[in-house]
Image (cartoon, rainbow over all chains, first blue to last red; front, side):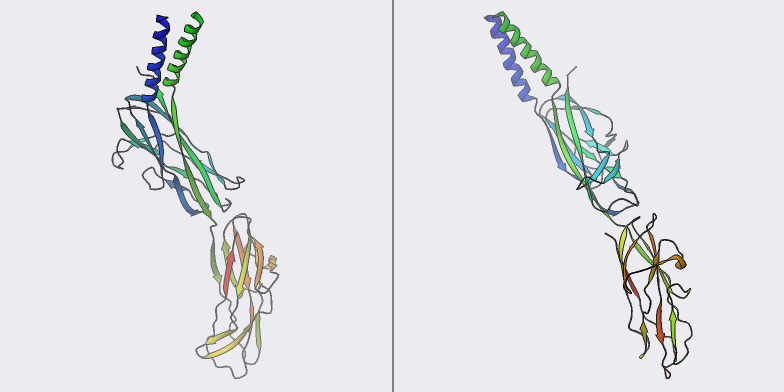
Length: 155
Length: 164
């Protein structure tokens, strides 16, 4: 009975730890490539207003791994036309403050590991390039970027 | 009781694992609107040259003196071409009647001799080349009256090309 109580206590403790490991990821801005003609690249840098912007916050000190699911194509509204998209090692950046000058570039195609302090906020910006051909169908295109943050075990 | 303890221990371990692998995500939507790239360039004016008083002068669309335009837009695309003609050419306050006896012609290459007539004198539908090119030629007819005032007469031919 005694050991049962200990295990039950551990579970409760664990549940409390789980609740306190509050990690939030919020999309602040969608990304917009605006309007342009076909036959030439359309690029937005992470420092442009059209870049996607996310905010990560952890209530506790923790190590996290950030992965970004990037679109290979934008698709037309009726999903019959595709527009190639590409990203480079300098398409994304992160910072602990919401300011251009303090940004650190990273490759969104690769996982990014960061150590978060208690209640620290991290901002992530992601740009990219679209490659409409001369024969690209004239219409509206859309795509999505999903940012996933995984809590890593502490050392 | 022994089994309950083991079960609880298993739940605890499972729960611990879920903490280590906990993930959160957010998605940003991207948008882009692609416009049809297009230009219209005047390659040549319609030139009737020197006129003979009392006689009509006609320039066919296939003639070298015809007006020539180049549209460049989306490749292999059906476009709507509309041509507007002046009813008169002017020289100061003097005027000379202008008419359009022949339908304008078009081609995807710069060769009027193999060009195709539009369905109407005001144009119609045509399809661009793989490079997005469409050439259009326009002729016309003028008649200088017997007492036409001497001078250089001119007018404006407008071409509008709409691609979807």
